[in-house]
Length: 334
Image 1 (cartoon, rainbow, N blue to C red):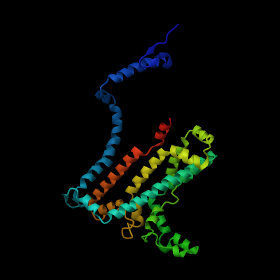
Image 2: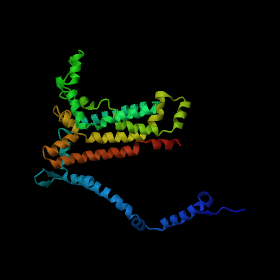
Image 3: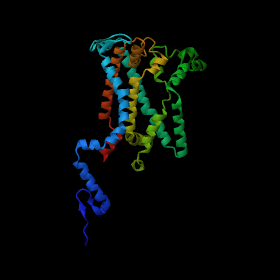
Image 4: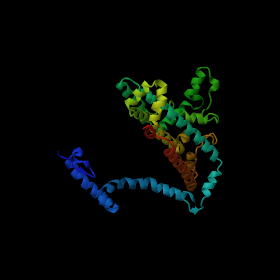
């Protein structure tokens, strides 16, 4: 009886074919026998292809950050002389009269955005995913994606017109339905300005967010849905116990992107209120922008930017370390 030839690297030759075994074994031995330097030289062509990307990333991202970090230790005004002052800019910002209020405003707006980006787009994506007609599902995805062609500045200006004092549509509607006592200057009233800014973008069904959640829902195997139905998990119970945990990777991504955007945001507040009334809607990003380009205090603005960067970096690390993704949850169940 003929015996099957075996190789310590490739296993039985009959399982993978004699040609594959003959090529795989020498290739593996050749790779193992090479030094790190030799492998780098061999892959020099691949590194050359990646080099333009890394060079552009360094020039337009890493170098500006390094310059901003160094500038934060100087008393530097645009067009003037620079003077090294160490941590004085950081100490001044922590004593700044806008520090506490601006961070409170930023945290409120960011928390509101995080809740909205978790609840609304995921719900809409689930409704679209549940449609029985593939054509209808495709049409709804296109319709929700169309508004992204409108620039954010145009969106802010439209909402400013809707909520502007007595001539805005919101106040005119309140007067028209006999609720004129509720009308007010939504952006000029200290009690409503933050809520008015937070509501920009209603109903919060961003097309990109919906598509990301929809992609996560389509990646759930049909066998999982069938097993859930056999166990009696249907409707809302199935959505909360099955769908939500299995799109945790998408939730994790969108939460982190929303937090980063919330910490960096200033253009909306700048267009709508310019931080007013008083400093009731000021956020750190706006204060950084005003110090850099209106007050010409570039060193102080860089210090604010470095503080925001460290906060975002810390939250990103915590998110990556402690916020479990769908892959982690699936690994625990296997």
